[in-house]
Length: 310
Image (cartoon, rainbow, N blue to C red; front, top):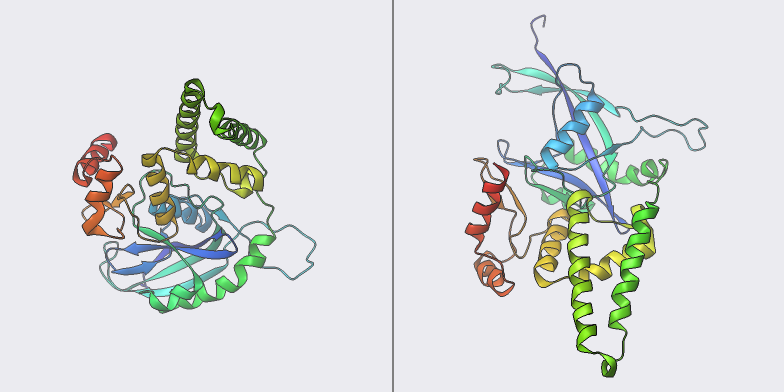
């Protein structure tokens, strides 16, 4: 046993709330041909917490807020985020070690407060999955068991952390734009002059561009960030976006929810690290749909995006 090789690793069970439902972020692992939670080896100088946060961002493009392990109800002190479990897992020879070895895995749990925000180009295809999907997925048994247990614990664990502060400036801007949107739409039909209709068009164009930049920079402005009224205003602006922006938003939401997209606007890296679309709902119809919404052919779109990130 003296020559046993041990590698330090970290894994993160990252959850997000969609309405009243919690979902878990899983990646599709190309070498193992199945789903896993994000994770990987620690780098020099890293602890398990730092490595877990880095791996979630690298593999899924999302920023996770780590949680402390549960404490007894009524415990009077504030707990800091820390590792929930440390487990030793036998591992076959791989690219890092040419013989069987051990992974000492530091398991952490966290929450993605803005699950529709994707930062950079994720290393893997990732999905948000609900509790009922665990038994249908190609998961390692240890991951399935722990994920099922954590689905039962995440609500109380997350509740012990303060919610992000409401962004009052962004909230005010959303409500202002909603008021402007409604001011042009609520004019009686008989009073709608050419000047008003031009103003209507300009308002929609400005709101569409602004909302697109907002989502690209920081993700969807949900209730936790801007409050319920302003979050509703964001959805109103999205509904009044031009068709292409609406299609982009719909695909982005579907992919973030672990569902198949419609228009092929959301790309990820394939096994050979070239860009490919996230799974499509109707691959045979996507080109016709793209044409109807004014998009270029999918192959041309992929070339254009690939050229822009080189």
